Each structure stands twice: as C-alpha cells, then as structure tokens.
Image 1: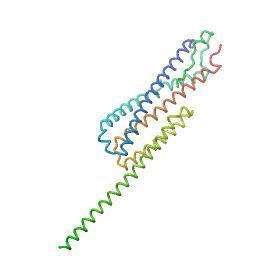
Image 2: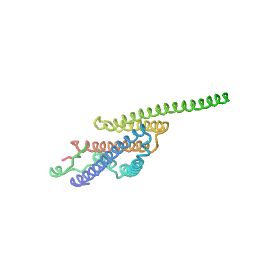
Image 3: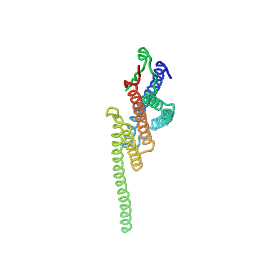
Image 4: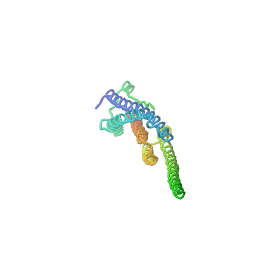
Length: 122
Length: 131
C-alpha cells in the first residue's frame, strides 16, 4: 500500500504528464491552424487565379514539407497518447483504482494537505 | 474562283465559330466548377468552426467524432470538386492535410481533458481520502 505522500506523488506525476501532453497538443493545434489559414489563403487565390500555383511554387513546396513533418509528429504523438503508459490510459487507471476503493488511507491532516487537485489548464 | 473563296470563308468561319463556342462553353463550365469548389470550401470551414469552438459548447468526444467524420466527407467532396475544376493538387492537398491535422489534435485534446476531468471528479469526491 502506498503512503499518502507516495500516492500524492503518483497522482501528481500522472497529472503533470497529462498536462504536458495537453500543452503540447494545444501548441501543435495552433501551429496546424496557422498553416491551415495559409493554405486556405493560397487555395482561395488559386481558385481565382490558377497561375498562383506557378508563381507561389516555393510557398507550396514549403507548406507541403511542413505538413509532412507535422503528420509525422502527429503520428508519433498519437501513438504515445494511446499507448498503455500514455497519459489517457494512466488517468483512466488512476480513476479506476480510486473508484474501486483501492486507495491508501491517509493517516493525518498534514498528508491530506499534500494531496493533489488536478489543475485544468483550459 | 469566287465559289472557292466563298467556300474558304465558310470553312474558316465554321472552324472559328466552333472553336469559339467550345472555348466559351469551357470557360463557363470551369467557372461553375470553381464556384462549386468555393461552396465546398465554405462547408468545410463551417464544420471546422464547429470543431474549433467545441470546448466552449461543451461537446463530448462522440460529437467531435461525428464532426470529424463529416469533415472528412466534406474534404473528400472538396478534393473531387477541385479535381473537376482543375485546381492544382498541391494547393488542395496542403489545405485538406492541415484540416485533418487540426481535427485530429482537437479530438486528442478533448480526450485528455475528459480523462483529467474524470480523474479529478473521482479524486475530489469526499470518500476518497478517509481518515
């Protein structure tokens, strides 16, 4: 059985892992959105003036390269997220372990103070 | 001689007329096809907006997955509309790829939020840490 502090550390570790994954996701999401805006602009211009594809060839090539790189990053990230030791699976295990009463008894108030509330960075 | 000139005029006129007719029809078809691309683009953008504001509207993962599926369909429709309109592939692929990336990240983000909230709900329940 864990002590109260060990349990709190465990929860904190899982939470930090989940939050860092979330922060990374938010960053990648913003990057993808900015690239989408650029691609939308180029696509709109191409619809009206098809010659844009020739004059802006370098921009298209750059965006294509960036997208291929992003796709690689996404695949890695998703496989990490969905793996057995990924943050989602760990949080689920944590939730199950607690809801099935597999929780250490906290001995004193001081240990209670060291327990963790999960900060949601939205 | 005059008969030959008349024949020549008729032939040249016929060829030019047919060519011009073809050209104008092609232009009109192309414009219609491009208009369809713009429509498809707007539909895809509207669905993306739904995905973007998902957190504010407190949507579930199921809702987002439905949204993502309909985005996929719309992107496929956009790609085929672009193919008909003769829009270069590079322009289309970059846009659709970015949309798919964005949708994927959004769903993964909500999965983590839901997992954190579920764990938080259990941890903050009064029976968890017993004296």
